[in-house]
Image 1 (cartoon, helix red, strand yellow):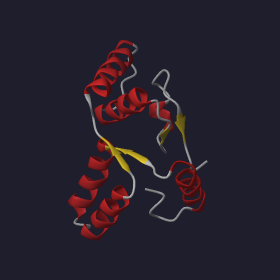
Image 2 (tube, one colour; image 1 turned 45 degrees about the vertical axis):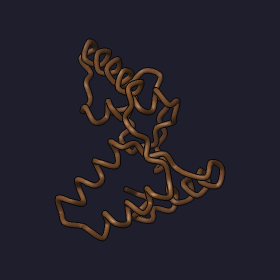
Image 3 (cartoon, helix red, strand yellow; image 1 turned 180 degrees about the vertical axis):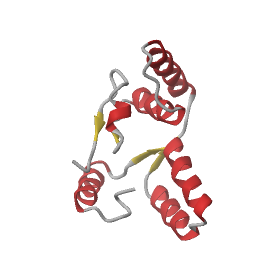
Image 4 (cartoon, one colour; image 1 turned 60 degrees about the vertical axis):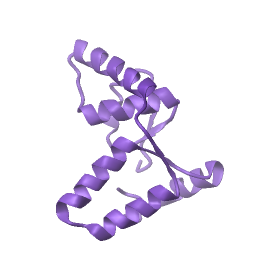
Length: 123
């Protein structure tokens, strides 16, 4: 994650967002993706750091409304022959159900999802 690498533009955007809203929102799917990577390489120090970061912010669970939105996204993308990975579909479902702006480096995937507001804080 660029934030943990100290990328100045991302650090500044995070600071601005936290000043305005008091916290960041992170999906439980994102939490899983980050933690599985740390687990695989044995980066227990990074796991601890990420857990502490999440404890200061809001980890959004996958609930029924978000799952329903994700199913709609999947069906739409599949019909159009434009599927993205399931984890990204679940993240999009959570963002759509909660009316969140999705901040990601992977704008190309998420721009395929109609109605999803996407930002890249690296650009």
